[in-house]
Length: 448
Image 1 (cartoon, rainbow, N blue to C red):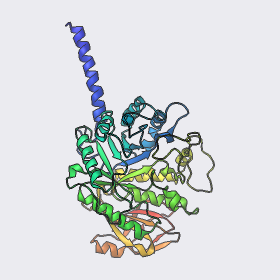
Image 2 (cartoon, rainbow, N blue to C red):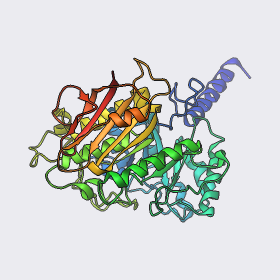
Image 3 (cartoon, rainbow, N blue to C red):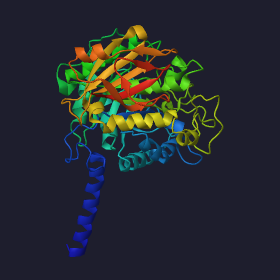
């Protein structure tokens, strides 16, 4: 063999291996699993759950439309996209294919690679009844999908075995692939999680709707759910992925909005989602205050109406009675918008060490219907402060004192320096005389 053919063969082999490595490592240097970071990427992730059909462009496939919106998702601080089932018929052999109404395998490959350039991973829902689950899982993992969620895997021994099988399959891939499981939302709070004893058999992320799907915004209902999520974190087996909206739930704004404080209520929901120390899932359009479900946004992969999108990406339209709206351009231009509130919370979720990894301790102010919790860093210092989050869950102002709570927890402090607040108030909050306006959120550093 001459030198030229050898060089050509070497080049082809290098390209082949590089392509294989691209799918295996998801092509993002510095991600955990790439050999440059030891921290699991998924422990405090923000996951964006979406049906690709919701992003259908004027030209091209819905998957291509989603690829076109990666800049938007990156600006939201999204770490991973979770796609609803994209297989045409998961119960048949063509579970290793894509519904042609959503796009092609090439479109998916392009989404994965372009998302990687935005520091975003792609996860995939697998529908119940997926045929030959292990084989199907390996097919998608081979294409570079970063994780899998089998819908409805809650509680039973059979589903626990399915999760263990998927964990075994995903462990052979680089890039810290993750398996997502479900908590049973009908179980009482606190719930004993039906997961295997061995950590390596448990899902890394467990979708937890307990705090975000209560019938009413009541501190007495949400506080125990936050405590239950913290108990799950402490087991070290699975990280709760908090869920407030999704294909299986009426949208939170449809449940909680009162036609007067809708924007403030939506900001309360976002705060619960992004500041309690768990991983967080944002459902398509939730960050824009959508109150209705798109006909295409269900667990079905067949789009039924793509001509009337719920989200408008173009020039701003006039607001509707000051309520949350689905016009992205208008939301981006308004510093007080729900979208920008989500972005600020996401920045806090990722960038503040106390919010990211501190201990969560709930405070009982159920009588005032105020949901409050302390985020305490491992070492309290002048540069690593205790944070306190308070949410008034009523349409009336709330007055309370946190001095007894701070004394009970053996913390030092007399006032709170504002980090983030949803109302128009200014200045610090003194612990012995706190006033929260209706449905207001206040996040402050404990100072003395």
